[in-house]
Image 1: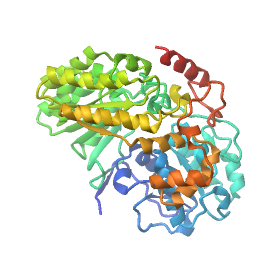
Image 2 (image 1 turned 180 degrees about the vertical axis):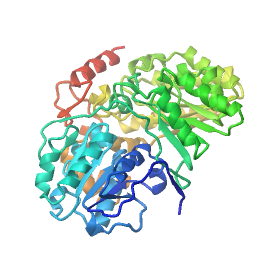
Image 3 (image 1 turned 180 degrees about the horizontal axis):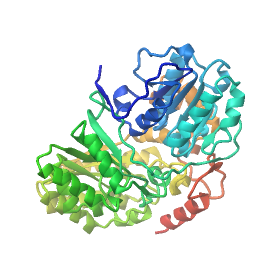
Image 4 (image 1 turned 30 degrees about the vertical axis):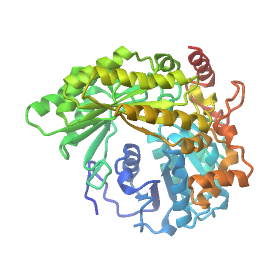
Length: 510
């Protein structure tokens, strides 16, 4: 049993008239390192009259009995999370589709990046879905379900459909994606030694990314970039340090925070004054590899840093909107080495729109030049293959065919291995089906259910598609015309489709 420290005052609840499960489609250790999941749980846990229980994919028994549950909320972060979600529903003897569940069964809803970008493959599964930033909407929807507890499901769903950011597939024709102002600093409300990152206090420094790489869902789904006030960040860090010495700063572009150097300086001064602090960040932008930042991270125990270069050639980096020169990469390595780091991990992508064999070869050439220039400095590469994501400029572009991607992967593995560089590349076969789900429509509901029933392995995806006569290439590899209606067009989102279209045209012509 893991130890948990609650960083908020939990109300003493004696009388519950409403019970809720909050399901995370992964093991408990992952859930306890998921900032969004824990923060949403905290908000509901602080409400009177509602008993909420955290439930995970590895939960064996629950504290609240199944027949007492009124509402089930779910986090949906990765395309393949449906496997754990269906298993959970089946384990509790609920129908996988909303229409197959009884009036006495709880209302079941989901939110998260997968749902916010394209909920259509799952519209028959959930009673309602939350589109966009969920902090307020999640809370308001739960309160409404509590208030209307004794009403028929149809009446509750009708009221939910009137809420901004709530999509009730049986009722809503359009839905507006919610973008929240960052009025508070979100942090880990429960510190656990059983978390994937044990006893780590995570806090959100900013949300979104202004770089706007053409393929990046994290950027476009969270526009505009928003920053938490410096004073609130410092106050939150102080709260965390009362309970642990491990701090992690979260955000897609944390170093763009106007006072990021001041945050680093604040931590560094504490370390210099003898306080034991371990601080980590997920990755750095190349222009933030400056001594003031990297020095702090090294003092705070970070051994390696990740730098997303995305592509080997400057031409292709311009196409994806990653305006990064080779000179800037060298400058980042200089700073990293001078500050005492032993290596850098580069993150890249293959199969990007307009990519040629020359672009792939340039990855190898760049690696050779780095190895010659920085002898003894450790570099390694992690690659994924391009997956078109809904509501990004590259949503219209299909994936390269599998044979071509495998050929590129094998070439990179062979050539970088010769240079003594470690390399990992995601599976092109799995990424193909991720693209299928990412650009899927309502016709995929029965498909994902059958894939689940057949075990969810790679072979099941292929076999079920054949059995159901589904053309998976249509979703994964076909490039769509700009005037084609897309399944997720009903989501009112900023920036809108016209903006994404202009961005796409401009980028691929660079």
